[in-house]
Image (cartoon, rainbow, N blue to C red; front, side, top):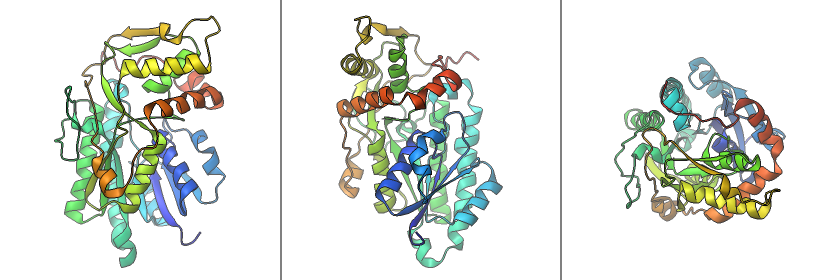
Length: 356
């Protein structure tokens, strides 16, 4: 274990962070330290299997706490940082943008400064291989029309408090690279879905509402388009970038699975009709309800992931149809994980009306 690569993962109790930790421990010789504040969306239960692994450790801390972050770097001495800690839900950013500014901007700055000091103190061989990998979103690019794809050279045009805070953090990461020489990479991903997804997001919300035979809310006309990426494919992409990505580069990660929100919900309903038919003989699609749109709702996102495919050899393994079936099956089989959330932390209420 002494020679295992030491990876600090921030936000590792979240949806994507926990998937990355499970993937790393399953596929690589690594030691992982998970630094997570455990906000409402951070769930240690997502890391049950990791917690039993001697190569995994957890520290509860806020990335905005400079002293706690400094101690973490000093005691763990990472070879790499996977920075996933972030406030991530657009609707919540509309209702309360302050937390997004504090975590996504100030927190990233605090982490960058600690990483810079740590990197500067390393022996030359470890300095050369150190990486600070910042995980971001395609939402920093704004909204597309009917045609075109986001590439790594697409100008930033964020349109929500969430995406603006992530755009700011992207710029900070690259500034620390150009100004101080810190070895960094950035990944910008499309919409993730899969197991252990906090149920405020579209896919798990629809699955769980359908299981409870509650209305399935769709914003506006349901014609907003997203590119969907299975979370385990994303975890593999992040590990690939960490191993082979070039310092100072950005890599877009997408599933090449564009769907309207209505198509996503209809697909989930069809899978549930097959896997768990309604006891009353109805169809889950009958529960679809159109509700008032989100303020400033971007029309379309779509990722050009040709760079990571061409230069690093990564490609997604799941189609939307196979991934969504796996996801629905997981929620049907793992009520132990989501029932405490639905009965306590988040019961499916509407967020992000922007009226406050």
